[in-house]
Image 1: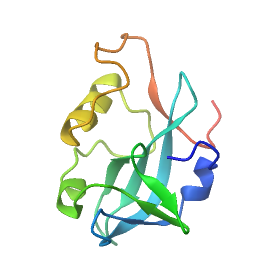
Image 2: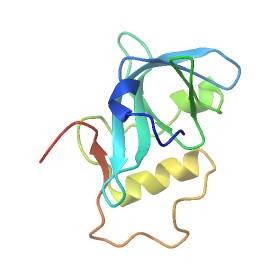
Image 3: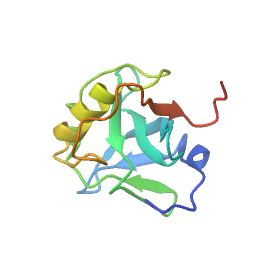
Length: 123
């Protein structure tokens, strides 16, 4: 994803799958604590449904929309970890595997590394 995009500007934007089908609306953006890079977005998939995590790399933010290069069914099938809290390294690895992506490092992350800090939330 473009590095110059403010992750908070994604919140409330519509997300679409690789075919152009609407997936939902971005609820939250998660940053890698080590780099501050936007890494995941939680997309509300419907009025009474849950949020699905989508990877922001290799997604694109184009014309005010988040384009996720995966099928809607795969996105809706993503592991459900709830929103509003950090993703553990194990949860992040599950998401990488779900989407068939390589994690940032092929080795297991260090146990004390914390992923998924919410954009705009200071601790």
